Amino acid sequence: MKENVVIRTVTRILVPFIQVFGLYVIVHGAAGAGGGFQGGVAFAASFILIMIAFGAAEVRRRIDNRGIMCYSVIGICIYCGIGLLCLLYAGNFLELNVIEAALGIPHLHGILIDIVEAGIGITVMAVMISIIYDMADDGGESS
Amino acid sequence: MKKKALIAILFIGIVLFWAVEDMPAYGDPTSPATQYTGQMYVERTYPDTGISNIVTAILITYRGFDTLGEVVVIFTAGISVILLLRRGGRL
Amino acid sequence: MIDPFFEAFFSRYNYWMAIILMLIGLYALIAKQNLVKKIIGLNIFQTAIFLFYISIAEVSGGTAPIYLPEGPEALYVNPLPHVLILTAIVVGVSITAVALSLIIKIYEEYGTIDQDDLMKVVRGR
Image 1 (cartoon, rainbow over the protein chains, first blue to last red):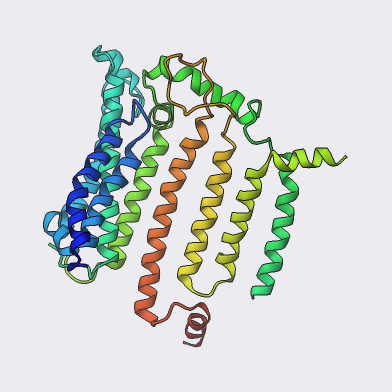
Image 2 (image 1 turned 120 degrees about the vertical axis):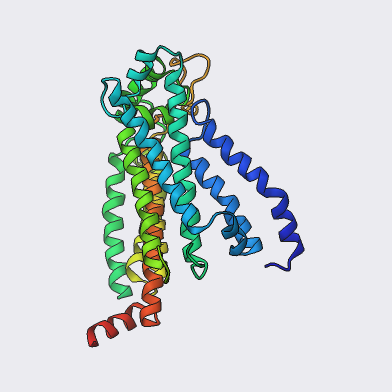
């Protein structure tokens, strides 16, 4: 696939737009249609497109095996971190109302939900890329 | 094997088609699924949370624990594929 | 006498479509010999279940469950099945990923992914 000029050119043009669309879908989870799962998969689709058009070595140069495992752990840690933060303000686990009532900042509930959605999106993106690293290639060299 | 599978599928299909007439019609506004719980979520989301998207608000506010289990499931699938298919070298 | 029957048939066509897809997926899961084709049958079966569940949530004349400026007085579709199926779709993706990686390991070990040959090799060992 490396010798095909049409695929390479179209990939180079399209990949930034796909990434911006994926981030848009994650950030607009609270005000319109969207959310963490949907945006994460759309963001990972851009990396899979680079892998199809240019080969797996190009993507491994940008995110190696160890980095992808770190990303997937960071996403789930953000989710659990926000949940445990609610325990500090005398609420139940993942009860986001008590933080807004204690700190008094308006619309804090919406901001916390956006942070949680970003965490979900990072984990889903990392797992999608990691699955296709191991299935479609020889596994590469581990870092 | 294929003939026995066809007979089993036919039998299951007849039983399922017989049970369709008890289900509510398509697009019925008085079905039990829409009247009690669905209506409650539509009315109580904006006063409780201030978010316009009802589906995302239910996912994170009312059923946040299920979504945490969801993210753990997909994380476990990623770890399983790494453990099964990584050939040689350190993890 | 025939009219109630036609009424029951044409107003519930979504369940018929879901049941037909379910039977196709179940046949592929049971009767095919290739292991990858069985996993594809499992995916078709899961898609039929999602269609069945989400079509229950439809309200005729309703709009998407995002608040319009009128607030709760407008007519929305039921948001609860959408939430539950979102979780189920992600579980389906996880199952497919782990199943396909198990099939890759089986192929590296035995050299075949046909069900009859595998049963002969495993039983005769």
